[in-house]
Amino acid sequence: MLRRLIAILLTVYAIAFAFGALTAVRWPSIMMVMSWIVKDDIASGLESVDWRQLGIAHGGPYLIASLCFYSSGVMVAARRRGGVLWYLYGALAGIPCLYLVTFEPGWWRDPSPEEGAIAGVCVGAILLFFAVWELRVRPGREVQPAQATDVPLILTKPLAPQVQAHSPTPDVPAVVRKPKPTFVPAAIARQRASFAVHGRKMQARRRRAS
Picture 1 (cartoon, rainbow, N blue to C red):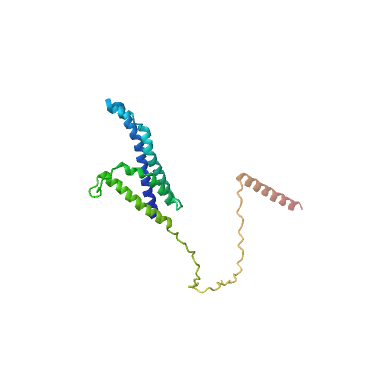
Picture 2 (picture 1 turned 90 degrees about the horizontal axis):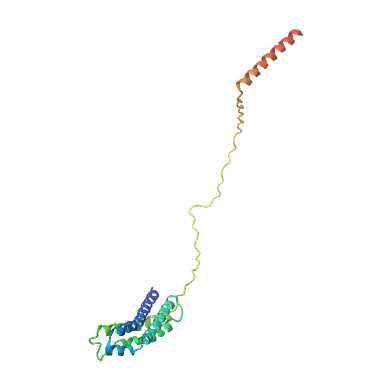
C-alpha cells in the first residue's frame, strides 16, 4: 500500500511538470500574438525576442523532469532498481522552477502565495525522495515454506468389515404365462369354422362307409 501511494505521488509530480512544460511552450506563442496587436515601441521590443526559443528553453527541462518522475514512479511500483536515480534526474531537471519566484530576505515570515507554493513543492520533493530511498533499501519479505505437521487421525467409529448375511432364497416356481390370443379377422374365423365342419362331415361319411 505504501509503495503504491509513493508511486501515485510521483505520478502527480510528473503531471504537474508536464503541465508546466505545456504552459512554458504555449505562453511564448501568446506573447507572439500580443506583439502583433501592440503597436509602437512595445511591439518593436517584443518582436526582438525569440519567444519560441525562450519557450522551448524553459519548457524543455520541465518536460524532462516530468518523464523522469514518471519513470521513477514506474520503477517504484514495479519493485525494480533505478527509482532513486530517475528521481534525482527529475529533481535536477526541475530546478529552473525555483527561478519562477524571487525569494526576498525573510520571505518565510510573510510568504506570498507564489513563494509558499514553490516552497511547498520543494519540501514535498525532499520528503518524497526519502520515501523513495527507504523503499529502495527496504529488504524483501522472506516467505517461509509451510511445514507439514503430523496430525493424528482420530476415528469416531471403529473400522470393522461390514459383512452382510446372505440368507438362502427359497426356490420359487417360475410363473408360466399363457400366450395372449392373436387377433384373427372375422372372415378368416368363418372360413376356418366352415373347414372344420366339412372335415367332421367327411370323417362321419368315412366311418359309415367302413
